[in-house]
Image 1 (cartoon, rainbow, N blue to C red):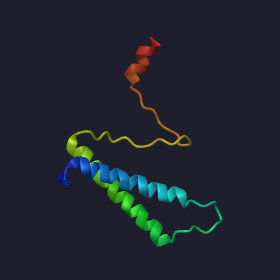
Image 2: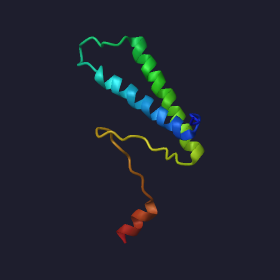
Image 3: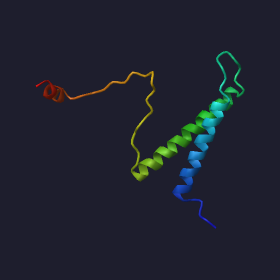
Image 4: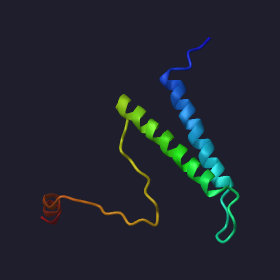
Length: 93
């Protein structure tokens, strides 16, 4: 019998839970103005579960040294790009 306490199992479990919760949210999405099929409490529970799953996934990544602190960038979101003044001076010379 296999040991279900391995990090690989936990990672697979968390990924499956996250994907399932996101699929439920997508499948029950309604058009603006229509009543949502899920209650506010159920929607909050899904959000809370996703928060717990993602928090644990980040903790696992930090423990393994693979956490990159990356976050999604949305196409309608303005991004600020920083640069060094010294680098800018070099390009102007």
